[in-house]
Image (cartoon, rainbow, N blue to C red; front, side, top):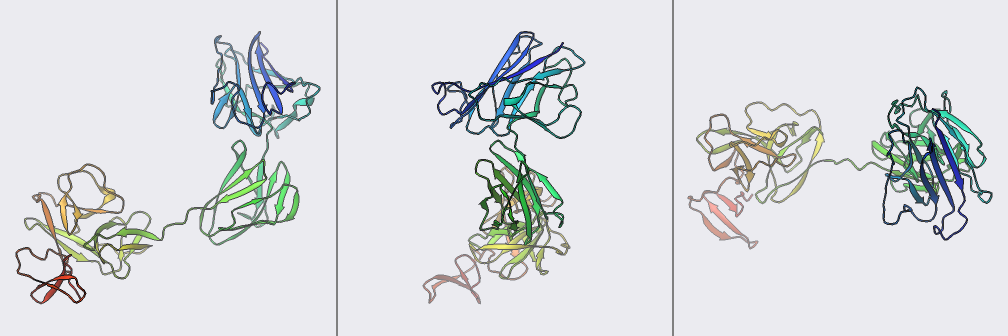
Length: 453
């Protein structure tokens, strides 16, 4: 049975129906006297015709053979829509459930004499293949097509054909030397209603040259894009001078074209971090582990230690890494200035850690009873199940070792950060700078337990 897809357009005769509406399209989809209707209008505001509704789609599938039709706009499905811009508005056709070897349709338009604004419908996949076909509905008398070869078509179902027909279809492409010096490169933008966008992965510190094209009209007015100039109006009125882009970093650049204003905006990738940012605690300590971003370089003024726990001693012996680099996936303890914020630059080529290291990267954390984390200048048993923050480290006791309440740090060279010794005799005095210090034997400590050089 032949299905008739009728499209009637009529200009609004009075302004009382919808304020500031320039044109109205009334769409009818009919088969065997069963009819669904959708309305699309162009005006100054965005709203569905039904007051209070933000988006709705009423397919009216009361009869299994019923068909449907609606438009899509800003993520919503509408049978009645008033939009400021009718640009790249998909017209969705829902086919009949009636079993049929073919799904034949006929499209025609009836336009009121007072209607002067051209409205176009583009068939992106016309029968027989080939380039898209654009129909000026004002002058259309008859357009026949079939949906049997559509990827979404399933015979005997209400198949949804959502990506073939577009109201006022506008395409944007970009030609330039992004990949080919001869400007052979052509890229298609993705349409997002009032805008179109394109993502390109580009190199750092490179000059690119290009032009924009909208519906075949060239936009090239010499605008120069860089990190400080990311948006220009580029009218598609012909060639003046090539557009240029200077990239500052390697990554994904997003090109966004706004149809109404001929504005091209380029979003630059976020700057890559220089390395791992770490804040030391009041004792100048922090746990750390590098991840898949790369090994970590140990900056001047900072030391890094692996650790070995000896059962029954309740002491963690720390051994300094002297190679200057921390391999990715290795847990360490850092030591430097109290409360300092430090950056460990990304690097490569770190030497593998030899010997035993009971510190593990936070990426390998799994809740257990034999796990300890740093607090102050000691390690305390971790009793929570929450995962540890990224780029931290934890102590995992060797198998069979009893679990003490806390574990003391012992460096392989005197740092003064170990417990000063609550049982040791110490003399308290005020230094010339007005700060309180402790003298024990030949060493002088501040109240954080650090040796004063």
